[in-house]
Image (cartoon, rainbow, N blue to C red; front, side, top):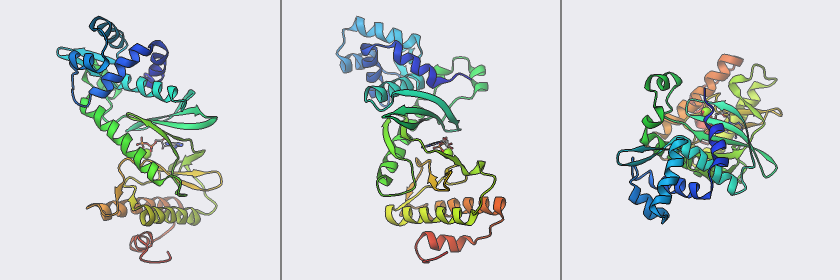
Length: 295
Ligand SMILES: Nc1ncnc2c1ncn2[C@@H]1O[C@H](COP(=O)(O)OP(=O)(O)O)[C@@H](O)[C@H]1O
Ligand SMILES: [Mg+2]
């Protein structure tokens, strides 16, 4: 499989400032136009037309955008390159490391910035599978415009939630920045719970999870909404970190109760199946909502 971000990183070294000026203009305009008219890019950049067409040609050749009958379409690769370029120009990312997780909805890379290890998450909802690519051939041209918008929106949402949760001692990653569909966070030296085979004190870990959820529910008014052993990380000192927040809802949302129940049920199912721990959902629900003081 093509490592798209690696390709995007190469593009950042290939494109000069003027090419990036045009790419940023496309990024500013794509939410309004599926196919961006040249006149809109012209007025955005103020570049002479010949120069602009030359830059668009470079971008198209590298598939950072795609030419269509009525203009130019932004591509995910173009957006990847622009996000990387901006993180690097802002001094937030100095070096891109290996991919650490390729999920259904995101690709997460290790990165170095400000002397610390970072996690760089690119949203990939609506990604076309390898098989589909082979079938469709020109997959870049077929990339869903609405998916580009949805991915940017999800990244913005996750960044806003992390920002709200940071600095208050909640067990979530630290946000370092967000560009388009990419969220930059502190890298947690921890592994997802689903990979954990043995625990000295599973009850204690489970309790820590419920305590963290309770604080977030009561003090921040938020419910993760996608919690499971895949979105809970465990450090070597058995601290837990809750990740993956784009779909979080506030506790007054219409479906809040349902989502909280599902989150808790997933956790109970995991601890029951793997460690034989029994705990009643209604009791945990009351605890997390602070109706009961103890579990
Ligand atoms: N801040 C982080 N530190 C360390 N690993 C992370 C971090 N964020 C994500 N990951 C890794 O990337 C994987 C996918 O991230 P996640 O936010 O759950 O996205 P997805 O929507 O694809 O599930 C996680 O399971 C975890 O292994
Ligand atoms: Mg996840």
